[in-house]
Image 1 (cartoon, rainbow, N blue to C red):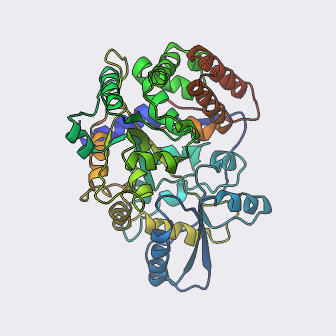
Image 2: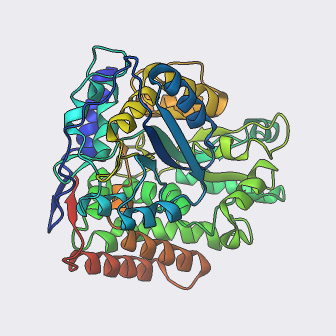
Length: 449
């Protein structure tokens, strides 16, 4: 499959056909003309509020300095690990920042439905930064479509993460271990690791999203295929109580019952469990491609890590190359005071040169075409190759569409691992949560095809 046809296939499999109903029309304005790189002189400043996670905020601050040199416009970067707590009241007050990446705690699709987010279709049809190419054409189309909903382009991607499992290649080579490709191999490997006195698998128990993304979802897809996952995302009746979900839950419980999960992991934060992994207290961990950047300053010198896909069932129906990605949404508030230069600054940030710099400096993959065509570090190479070769790339869009339901599934998976729920009870509770969302007319429903 060619690169072009691969991305078209991804778009068909994962992200086409997002449509809103049951209320919510999104923002109304998309007529701003954004700068494209011409020298401008203005005293206006741009306020940008960003989630300060594993990649920090220094890259954005440097980009702001460069943008001022190009345009004369001052860009003020405000970053914080809980920036959403600052952004939310600003929206309520009608005084939002000009551009924001508020992180995963902020319900950006609700903000779209509440007409608090600028529609970007018009500016996306304009020129990219210092280029004759249309801005929309500089993004990988399937990833860009993850920000399309309620009849327009409201959310824009920047970097994206690939979700899978991680191991230390030196540790595995020393012990003669091989990363498992299927669940049968996983069980055999876990026993070997356990016999060595090491925990086979650790996980970020305080944040059950990691187990949903790294175990439950890929195993449900392995059992029932990508179509089954689309039914789950679309809240189709019975989808969350299906054989695929229950089988995936049984696999999780089996690993727990056989003692293959690290003791105490349910109480660990993401950094605590990841520290256990990088310090060789556990052999494998589910996580996104932000893992290396997040742990780089605290892990032992010369520590290596490599990525592999969650081991699937030998007899599974799903595509074994299926791989999950997640984007980090940026958007311009409808009430922003300087939309023009907010968009101009983001055009600059998404230029190919800046995107490639982000890949090189931060060690992640970018939604901008050609950005990933650089010398990638070891921890990204396998992830990038698996994305490039996959015929079934998907995204957990239901997490953003229905945060209340996602929270319920997180609660239920914790109960599953702690033994409070059987796999069958887990499926029933998840289906109950889906039914509540289906019957709630206040919640905008979206369909993914």
